[in-house]
Image 1 (cartoon, rainbow, N blue to C red):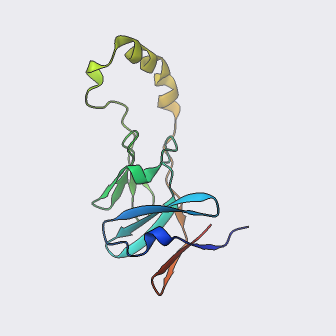
Image 2 (spheres, one colour):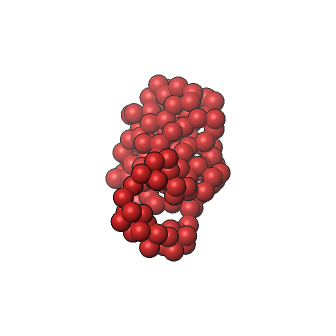
Length: 130
């Protein structure tokens, strides 16, 4: 059953910062975008990586795993995942061959938008509804 849960880690979150905390068994990402707080389940819409390990700047969250980019207010996809990264040319040929075999799977793996969670603040307390 859904209910309101306090995210203690989000207390004092400054504009441009993000954090995460547990609520009802879920890992919750909280962002402060220009003084407005936003909350999402802390999982990338591409391959489920934790978003708090990525970056948050210029109004977007970028996943650390494959660089998928999401709007910090709405959760909409703003940039598709990138499977090539600097230094890949130095990887062993066997690894690159395995990656090539997985290409059809990656090509059909969707990157879905993040679902915003209801959030409320009161007397410095930040709560999400999950």
